[in-house]
Length: 381
Ligand SMILES: *Cc1c(COP(=O)(O)O)cnc(C)c1O
Image (tube, rainbow, N blue to C red; front, top):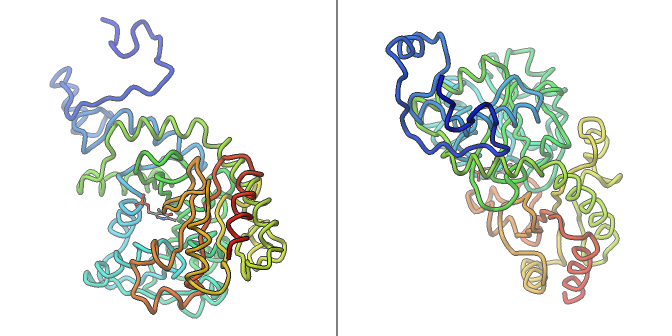
């Protein structure tokens, strides 16, 4: 046999090769038949599968302790693929207000297609039994949540879901798989916006759904049908990001704990939300279901008004005023003016966010320099 041009004489490249092919030459009609009959996996067309993407799917599945994972073009593509794969007209979906804002937009489409939706506040998660119905098919949650880092007991939600046979889906983007593995806590599926901490460098957009072999097949069918397959270059960048992911996650979490402890005592910070603080309402559950720290995300109020929060952000020298999270640089934004613009104005504040609430994603800069920047900017308001 002639040597494989990618791995001549079996010497594998140390990095994931970027396979930019849309289609693949069939080695024989017999191989074509085996592929079409499902006897073997073979690459045929990019919308079906791509070897660079496939390698990253195995990496992410390992991080989440899943059988397998499906990677797609963005975190929202991942959420939407889950809804489209598992919900039908007449089904009931329970989703928390405290989930990524764009889920609200997708919910409008789902309602048009006949899905019945109940929105719950994460603070009321322990009352989920009251919202369960015989037709409840899915419970969709985020913990810690965006942006107020509220904590939901995944095991308790799963126990409730069992009563009606509903599926539990956890968006684990804020926690990251370094700190929390929802599948071990009873979730059926775990979702990531890999655009965030898994990629980690603000240079790629991707989404992940991890679960059982059966889930992989269900979701693969949807992706193949609708064409949300990730491009190989982004998959390569994601593989590269994942190599340093655990180091970055550890650094972010350690700094975030120190930053939160500092801010908690600051007179110009009236409220702070970080599950690593012993006084935080989510601390007890988070201590049970998170490991190795509480992640790099927090939210806090600055001064008294939206103008105070704006002035504080204008005065930051090192922390970037930008959306997104989980990247090497520390990022800060006012959710009311950015990530929550998706929501009608009255929905932006009903679950606890205020106009002077800021969301901070702690990066991997030295902890002292992050605290120093926050201190000097707070001194000005
Ligand atoms: C960013 C984000 C998403 C959406 O991901 P995209 O890659 O931007 O589509 C979903 N959930 C959470 C928690 C997020 O932070």
